[in-house]
Image 1: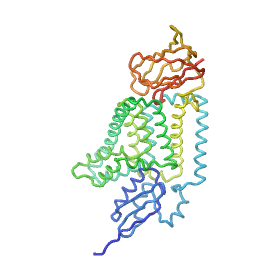
Image 2: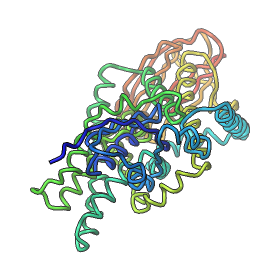
Image 3: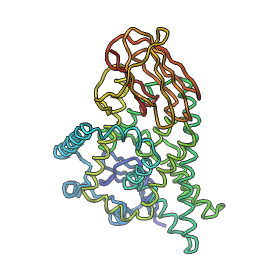
Image 4: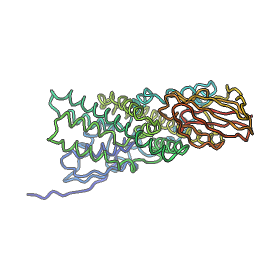
Length: 450
């Protein structure tokens, strides 16, 4: 019997954009009979393949093209890299395009702020499950969903016709339930830890760092792939998908497989997880994560169509817009934190001020405010410098971020509010504005010191 030589070949690949792409390429190529190992290098746009006998680029492209990827030999890559929008190399034109989009977004922000369109959005829709659902829809057309979609179609298509519908539904149910369960645990244990250590405004900076890194990763300026690739979910998912345990019925395997997709590396999921952590309410966090997962489900049924969308240039323009918006939100968290300490960089708040002067009783300025699920009411007050302030806060159904308050500029560190009456005292010294907010800056208000 002739000995088959084992070789290692490195080839050019285009279309890889995130850590999930690494998993997808490895998952699909290892199905080929003569390939024993695949090591993707997304940043370099290369994959190193260990194979027995000859390597067929046509066969590889036949497996990968439906997901928006294409491979070339080293010689072909020099010619082909300039022909399509799938090239991974950066160019001055690419940078100019990104800066142009950023300039347009800045102009839109300026006019929206002038007409006071952002303050209501910042305090309502961003905190809703519908917002998470929309984010899930956006994430579903990103390359983050390519791996989930590939696993879904690969597993479902290999079932008997009578089991396809049940298997597909089981996969989706497993995905949604796992997002809910992990979201519940995230807020239950993570939120308790953050309250224990009194993280305060540092949580704003943590959220900002996550969002900015996710945005920069989408623009290929940094790479989160190396960090996210260590998550255990990828190994569990690959193992289950490849082995297809005979001890489990198809619907059971599909449910478990769908559940494990929660652990796949995805910047959109990471951003939603970071926000869910700040809610401080396990039920709200679970609903938020489940809404996000529901938003990704329609794309599972059209994953092949979406792969074709990813080959068009407008798709990359869309990703750049989303990436820049994510970075802008992260910078907004930085600005909110700075404003808490008296440094106003930029603000979503209107320059108009509706606060009334606080009455003085027994030598103290009395400020009355209610904290409830929708925020702080009222949220603007006028106080005089040099006179102590007694801040009377009534907690009503506080079950999230609004159950905390901080105003570090006047020495009020993070305070965890309880249901009913709460009292916070401070003495304003410097004239100007004093901003207060919840631990994440999602709900805020101001004192005007005169």
